[in-house]
Image (tube, rainbow, N blue to C red; front, side, top):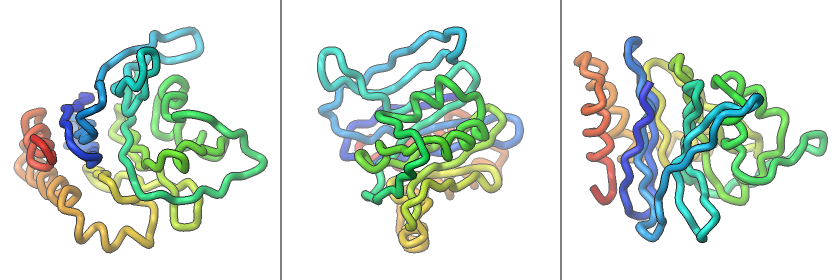
Length: 219
């Protein structure tokens, strides 16, 4: 299981994918964001009740780091991509989680299914304050993208087949989905590239890197 995140500086235009051929599994992404960000990698060690995890993110002050992606010692990997704003229907019976909830999932969860179980536990207000969708994958090859659907509910798009791609349109919003699937160059280029690697039995670090370099806005 490889967590592969080449860094590219440009406008916000991230692409993330999970892909497997049954033998190898790759979780890959371009962090296409502002060149003003001070990108860095840091880690939090495991404790009795929390998994160890490493983060990729940027520093906005001398002592404040903003995580954008991460992986834990159980093989759960998570990355974010910006999407258009969508209001969330918060539930009074749920606890409200302040901050980036994916950092809690990396501390507490080992699998995609464990993350899915937590979706009904919290109001995730950060996805409304900072509109993102969350791409999650585990070492078994299971993957999903979490986002706000057109009804204001947290929903998931699950991996179907050998790969799952997310970019900067909301996979869970049916009002956007059909148009974007036909018009998103980065999404379609990524999907075509992955299908070619799989068809040719050529899935590799180098092949995934070539796709990321092709779709990067400022390679």
